[in-house]
Image 1 (cartoon, rainbow, N blue to C red):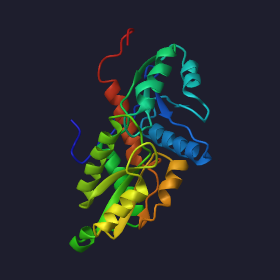
Image 2 (cartoon, rainbow, N blue to C red):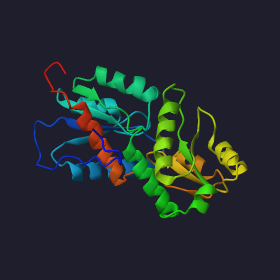
Image 3 (tube, rainbow, N blue to C red):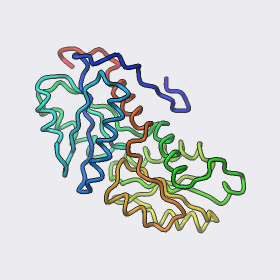
Length: 258
């Protein structure tokens, strides 16, 4: 059972276990070199929390190492693929399962990171870093709001996932949180900012619901809002969530037929 506050703590380190299935972080990939730097920083956090687990990285596209090459290097060893994706979409539904099915490695694919209370924790922390007041009063809350700026997807479950995260963040902040998208779905971020402003919400913050810097993050940052938070990146809550998804996938015994 996950506590309502999202405080999921990974198990205490016990030294490298040769039988621990590898944790393969599956990142999207980006032409922006900061994205790879960010994912590597997250890998470092994950390894620090669970040093007994071998952690690998594979990308869906654009950046090496690509996921098929990472899986090939594992041979027939077991691995859990943890998508660094914040909700359901084409990549979680088709691309990652296809790569796993084609690999010799015995794999399980974890759920995408979102929605989850730990994401709301990381989003809140990034907003505080950007200038959101740590102790907002009633007057502030009546005139403020947040746009949850996501990448966007045509997958029918993606919008539901974003709305659930928006509700989790709204519960923390006490203000309206409206999902909006950089591509593929409506409303876009400037439209959402404008709609909230028209309703008297004169301080509209953008919470970057993205894992790393890149094209979508840059697009959201120029939407004319009050403050814009950084992508979730290597926040400590993200590392804990990665390990939570890994542990979920290992909740049933691993057999030779897994």
